[in-house]
Image (cartoon, rainbow, N blue to C red):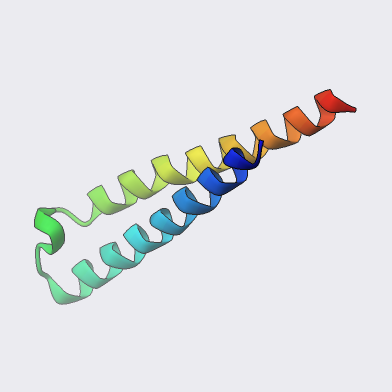
Length: 67
């Protein structure tokens, strides 16, 4: 069950990095990592944030089911 927490942290950190890359891309006006539109960074980040939330909820569900 610790796997859920590890996946949540990894996906959360990746989402924050993608958001920062989106801001940097918007400010610099460059195509970072071959992404043409800054909104695509936020689309990817939102999916990772949803994965992090799902993992935290799954961890809580598993803890409640044990007791």
